[in-house]
Length: 140
Image 1: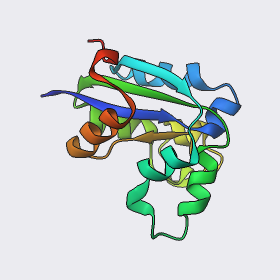
Image 2 (image 1 turned 90 degrees about the vertical axis):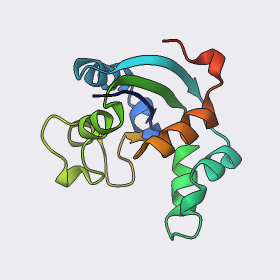
Image 3 (image 1 turned 60 degrees about the horizontal axis):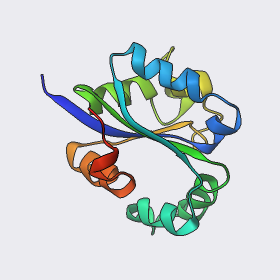
Image 4 (image 1 turned 120 degrees about the vertical axis):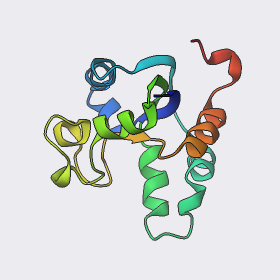
């Protein structure tokens, strides 16, 4: 198994409700390690660029507005098969379909306000990590 890094975002609905520690604990309990972390208030430009692949989708404006509504916690998680493990710990996008014990089942308010983001591929992880973190910020 390969040690990977992946981007994790604790979204505004979760930071607003002070769930950051509980969510990080779930990642750590699953064997993932936080190697970089920062709390930021995204601008509309940053959120729009980050989610640019969804620009033509009807929910894009709502997504950007949501992501700038409160601070987010940006993290780089590291571990064996970190990308798949992160997505497993988060659960399905729709909390109604997420497995018991997952972040989204326990904490998400809706499909749109689903408490967490995680990279979906090694390519996305590399791009997303580089978007938010410099190499100096990644501590192994």
